[in-house]
Amino acid sequence: MATGAMLSTRSSTLCQTLRQLSHARLLSSTPAASQKEGWFNKLLVRKIEPTKESHSRMLSDKEIIFELQTHNLKPGTSPSYLKNYEEYVKGIGSIFANEKVHPELQGSWTVVVGDQDQVVHLWKYAGGYKSIDRANSIFASDPDLTKLIQDRNQYLRQRSTQFLLPFSFWPLVTPREGGNIYEIRSYFLKPGTMIEWGNNWSRAIHFRQANNEAFGGFFSQVGRLYNVHHIWCYNSLAGRKEARENAWRHPGWDEVVAYTVPLISEMHARILVPNHFSPAQ
Image (cartoon, rainbow, N blue to C red; front, side):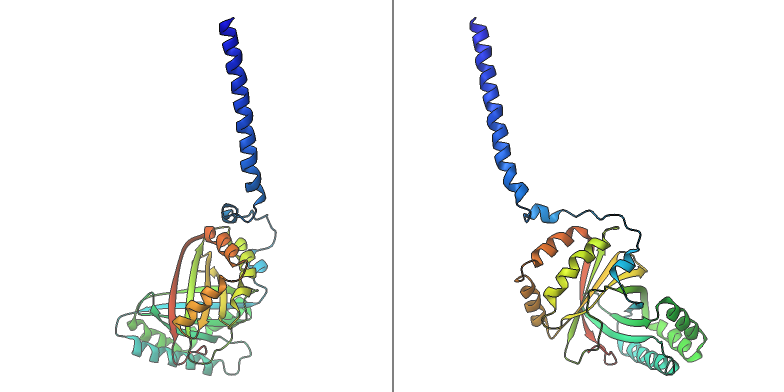
C-alpha cells in the first residue's frame, strides 16, 4: 500500500510537471511566432518558386549589355597604359562614327583603395549580343586597334572581362560631372539566390537615391556567374560615410541587409577615381 501510494504520488507529480513545462513552452513560443520582424526570421531566406522565365528576363528588361573590363597593371606602367587605352577609345569612336549602334564607354577608373595597380572600364552595347558580335568582328579586322591591343599587353600582368545585364530597378547609367569618387561593391552570391537578391534590392535602392549616388547595378551573364556589381558615386570618402549611415535611418533598410547577407558567399569593395578620358567624372 505504501509503495502504491508512493507511485501514485510520483505519477501525479510527474503529470503536473509535464503540464507546467507544456504551458511554459506554449507561453515562450507564442510571442516568437508572432514576432515576424525578429532577427532570426530576418535571416531566413525565403523560398523561390520555380519559374518558366529566365532570371535575366525577370531582373532586366533592357536589350542592353555591359562589358566590365578589369586590367591589372605592372607597377609603374600606369601612365603608358592609360595613354594607350585613351587612343583605343578614340579609335573605337572613329571607327563607329557612322554606326547607329556602337560600343560606348560609360566609365573608366583607377582603383586607389583595394586592388592596387588595377584599372576598370565599363562599356555599353545597345542591341544585345548581336552588337557585341559585330563589334568584335570589326575590332579583329582593324589593324590600328589590333596594334594598340598588342602594345597594351606589355603593361598587363592579368586581365579579365565580364558581360553584365543591368538590374531593371536601378537608375540608368549616365555621365557625371567632375569631382567624384566611385565605389564598386562586388558580391558573389550562392547559386540560386539571384531572384531573392533582386526582390530585396528593388526595395533597397529607393533608400540610396537621395543624392544621386546610385550609378549602376549589374549582374553577370558571361564570366564569373552569380556575381553582382553595385557602383556608387560620392563626392568624397566623408560623403560616402554619411550616405551609408543615412541609409540605416530609413525604416526597412535593416531588413534588406538581414535578408541579403545570407545570400552572399564572398564580397569586396574598391574605391576608384575616374581616368581623365572617362565619361563618368
